[in-house]
Image (cartoon, each protein chain N blue to C red):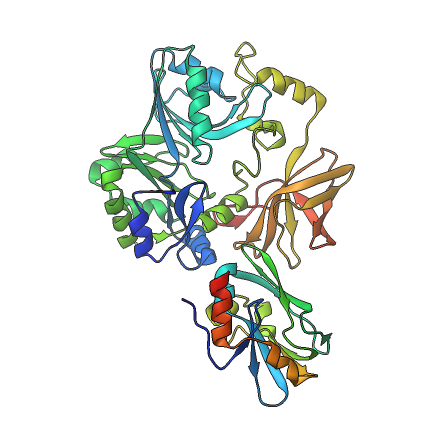
Length: 359
Length: 129
């Protein structure tokens, strides 16, 4: 039995092709994945991300609990609404999930975790929470719509009330604010400006329709994947999982090593991994014909690696991929594609930002 | 329900074949196949002059989702290819039976056509999938 978001009927109204995404019936596209991709890069598109799990953490120990639970340090968050991207690690230093944490106060935070990992995430969070005075509450009564693209903020502004417009006015990236009935955050998964909007289930279809009427194009999971990959953002389950160190998944920047006395879960394992050396996540570019695909073998100087995510980049017009390879990697590599070895360029794992190539 | 024109012949591997009446046959992929594959990003075609055998993989349709082999439905010589697909692979999605054609074969044995399915037979083969 698959779950449906409260926007299910709205997707069908827009002729969505629905697929099973980890137990959720979600739109893969509304006709053309590539057109939806371009809508987000060039104008404004929106995604139903209501399947994602919102977890509120409150209580006297909320800060110290999260300083134990995740690799980044929530003590860095001091301005209300500021958000932080981080990994939640197991004791072996593997990634249980990646998540965003919004700070409201030292006793109040909001976490947004992946849907595919929801059950194990909630179990892990509950287990760790046992030693702290915190209340952990999932918020299934909320839906979430991500509006992304160069015109996303302007088009969204046309459907907000004056107080909400004032609340988001000049909000910097990676912030969130409760504005009336909506929680509006300047976060996303596309490499474009825009908002992720948390809305009550009862009001979600109405918000979706208003955004449609404001000229925001519905975009499916297909476009969401090509957009995030162009932006060099990891997808849990492909680019990292419980067997992969964040150091080998381009998540080193999400680990707060200081202060040294903060003993977050996985720290000991990470220190060891760092000393021993781990693989690294790089970007691959194939300017010739063909599409790099996840699972393909990558041959580099000094060893072999694997493509963790690969796609055709609609913005660039050729294929790009993320690959985990030995640290000895040089500026080129070879990928095994359909039984042939093909030369590719090795670049930083990020390809497009704000509509432009950054290769 | 996708469109399956009755004047064409089909292979179970989702290619369609149109008799041009001069001993040559145009080949493409069905609307059903392009729907399964999603947006096309590259189409790798054989060269004009290539000799292909029925059932031989001779082209690749690469979509956002996967790379799929295209099989020659009949034996013969490739006499034309749809060069427009080089710059506009999306024509395969937009008009799979028209502007999205792939290549044309001069048949070396027209009796092979009898091995292909008619529209009804192809519809049945899709329904069984």
